[in-house]
Length: 258
Image (tube, rainbow, N blue to C red; front, side, top):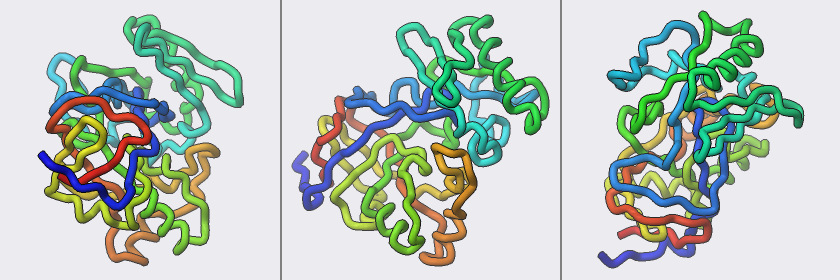
């Protein structure tokens, strides 16, 4: 299929979030499969007390069942690092390691859960639990997808807000640069090609209060949904896309419409 470049648009960053609500991990490249999310993206989540997620019968569960930035801004004040080979998760705070455990083992999950039981004790509904189901993505969306954010749109939002806005507020998987502000909304229903992968762009991303949290300090210093609604009469930024033709994407890849 012939593709047409988007006037110099390219892929500038790739991120995954192994544990829902915890920090991003930047990747230089990633291999994607049709109908799947990024490998290890939202593979785990932390239930906020007794929850409805059943690992034996995994199904989509509303995000309010888990620890998320929308309600638990303190999550942004810790840094997580995940090793996919060992499934060891390391939690750090203020530059020092505070917890480490393998999410593959009950003992390792208990170590991580115990840290959050102490660290988040004032906002928990009960003992936290690390959950996972092989092949299931614990995303806000019911179906596996990739979240794409356009730096041109963020630059426009910075202009109207007169405030620097970190792209990671929007929890993107892929960040595109070189496209005009809001161009991504015109990709809905179209096929987007990045590197060796084709995506079907499916819908706009409605923003929630999680975007109000500075991803470094954990402070709620902006009201992004209100700013969007007041300025543009909608609360959307970014788009979801489904992988339809697998392959590798890498930073620097040209972004094209098929």
